[in-house]
Length: 453
Image (cartoon, rainbow, N blue to C red; front, side, top):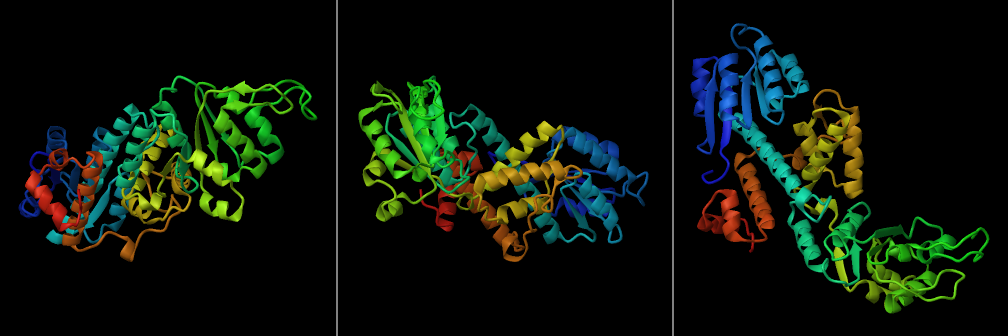
């Protein structure tokens, strides 16, 4: 992987024959270092900072036991919790493997050594380590990004982010479409934060959450005595949003009579409070959102066609989580990291949890994912969150990673190329540098996997 971050593997093994076998077990993309006891292992770990470690639990001065191996595992966890440690055990040491996983090991492998199978286990560890490193980089980038709270590496979401960057500085009324839980309000806030109105107020109102007889008053305000209980004058959300942004969430649930008043407001930019006669000019940018099919509602007569064209000068359609390849683990890891910090714990996902996260269709989208991860962080024991903590089934069969090494490599290559092109906005030169390959090599790989520019 010339030009890119070197994959570094530390092999902790005291048997000279196995050392030789393991040293030549991996291809040239992996830099292998060897240690045969606790002292040399910790020294090599500090020096090389490997992403992955294979650790034989039976080391001197206790080669027949596992005391030294567990001590090394504990020290590695303290030095670098994100390192992926694969423990090597004998056939009769299953209880040691289970204990190691509970104490934070990434995976385990039982002797005798089979080069192809161990290669698969190590490759998987490197792949997860690289995804986590990329996630950390993207989170750091996101903290500086105007798209606050939006975490994504998939091409569909990066395309939406580029559209937001273009639309935000304008004054066009924007309609955000998407299933429940996809993050429509986050996108609306991003539009506000990147606009010239960012220093003004952001006022949000959920049209589906307020009773019909109160919604008009919430939006337009009311005068004293306008209705029973109106003991004083009250400004509505629209007035409060003056010089800023008004976000009308779930506009598809707005009653028809109120749709007519919103249309008049959008056309004339003036309002009248309920029970009032004064026309009040208001300067706001309007962003709307809905999970409903507004075109079907127009055909059914439940949504005004003229209002639809007024609110959808620009439409942004958020893809559901199941159509955002790579984003599930990215988002879940960010949520877990934040939740673990709040709980004062150091947590990461086990391999079975990562596979289960990727296999789940997430009908409730990001909102469902966040709820599951938060609950799992609270309920989990040890340092790993497992599929059972997430109340997800472990991915098996067709849903799991392919066992054929060629398929694994090709799948990883294709995903990495797509992600790099998305991050660099299809800039071939930047993408090739990010991937650590030459431009001709990248073109050849894109042709191989049917990836267009």
